Image 1 (cartoon, rainbow, N blue to C red):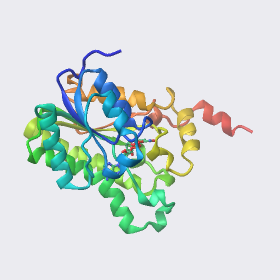
Image 2: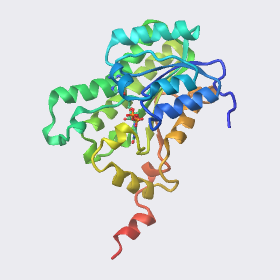
Image 3: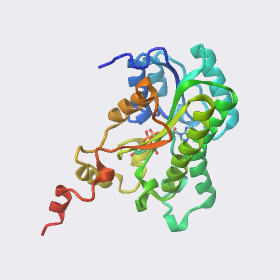
Length: 270
Ligand code: NAI
């Protein structure tokens, strides 16, 4: 049900590749709630994904940008403001990629060039997006910036390798920039720590499906879906959450606070 929660708000949504992407769901929900926004993704993703379909459905345009390039991000903000007719109220950072995970490198044998790529793409791009927004004075007061994280930032999940380090950096940037941007412009910055979700990025992780099932059995509410995550993003973009900032917010059906569940105990009974 739509309630016009984002009526009159302008945004930038990164990371929609196909209909499984969390960002795809966020775009559909934000559109239903009355927002206008631009879509963006890495130029290479334009060829692989279906983002054109989404742009059509949301009556908007795509501005290609490699999120590791400050120059691309400058164009992204200035073209978005021009297209949308004013400053930006919300930004979704939904970007993650680890060449080490893609190529099956274990944590003890990482390729360090790829490691730097993982951190640059998945974490420093969050800093760059806010740095550029601040420099161009592109955000309205009480605007909201949301990044997507995973609990491997706090606890070890061996298969998550260097992405765990990238997520820890991402969450730290939310605090660092959240303080700065809050003082300067009353802009809010948060990360959502989301349940395992079947998407292109998620499924690239070895053993993902088994782990997603385990997380589902551990969580009293079950895993949060991409559609649930989209609802949470809309809430964080809206004025209903205006005093929430510098937080890493678990959106995981209770997983992060559960030691063990009855279902998992059953699995180990002889
Ligand atoms: P996805 O694969 O649909 O989205 C990742 C996006 O990052 C893609 O659209 C890709 O093109 C984009 N991207 C990669 N390199 C880029 C670059 N240099 N510049 C701009 N964009 C670039 O997968 P998903 O799962 O929707 O991922 C979105 C976010 O959610 C990521 O930060 C991911 O780590 C996070 N997340 C995902 C979970 C999952 O289980 N799927 C769980 C918790 C967090």
